[in-house]
Image 1 (tube, rainbow, N blue to C red):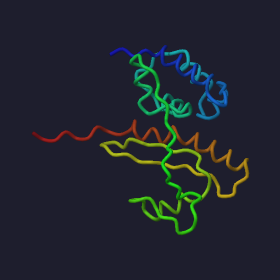
Image 2 (image 1 turned 120 degrees about the vertical axis):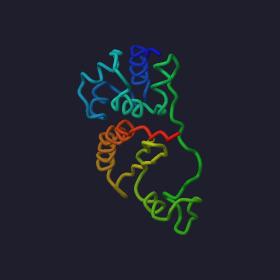
Image 3 (image 1 turned 180 degrees about the horizontal axis):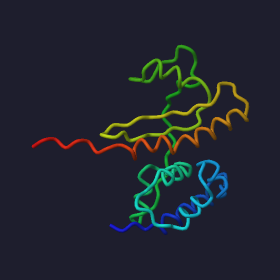
Length: 174
């Protein structure tokens, strides 16, 4: 199946312009820690041999779901990540509040400290998922929180590479 890279580039440009707050190409360059040429090539619809980590990082920056790139390349529309509304209020909960079922206490304690910056779900090679939760410094100043957010944005492409570097699971012998 042919991929419509121009369609994807247009979708990125449109979503960037509609993003709240509005993002410039320079904002994307800084957030993804890539060159301006990289962002321009993506937005112009330059054909690639495959979806890259930069494409995936850009999609996450815009709040798209992990399958959005493939949807757009196939002629569809991107899907947006829906913010969870479930009350997993370990963070900010009163001392002694119950931990959600199945959540290890060590994880619950970590989730309870610092402002939530973002989350990421990584498809692990061979199956399974890893969930990464990025939190800022407890009681951090706005500048410290912003610095943590920028560090998180720079780390996302490397985390996404885990999916791309993985090998296919070995085929079972027949």
